[in-house]
Length: 141
Image 1 (tube, rainbow, N blue to C red):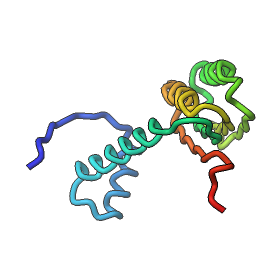
Image 2: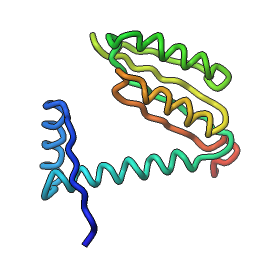
Image 3: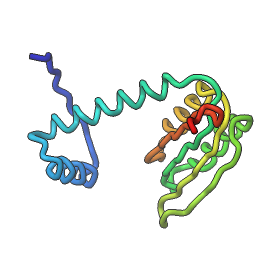
Image 4: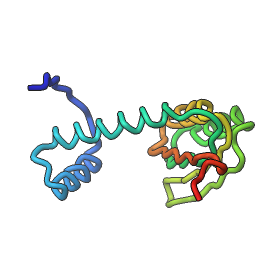
């Protein structure tokens, strides 16, 4: 049997409710098993992103609460720190409270990861999705 550790986490009620609906729909026997699967997926994603090397192009999509204290200013400052990597940005007002920013990037994969990590760690950022493409010359025809 696998060694298990017990942990305790705090989650917003609505988030936990949505998670419980999904695990019910998917037929999980327990919340713990669903959380273990989610953590495995997170680890796999992290390892994949950190295995990328060389020149890449892609997008970083950020969803954030625009009411969060000075968050827009912090995001803009971070983007200016990586202006040599950022080709363009697109800003969208999703609703009264949330904005989406799509950042188009081109450059070294390590630096793209660094930018993504800095954006992800900002308080008020709700979701960050990195989508990286292979260089155009490496796409099979």
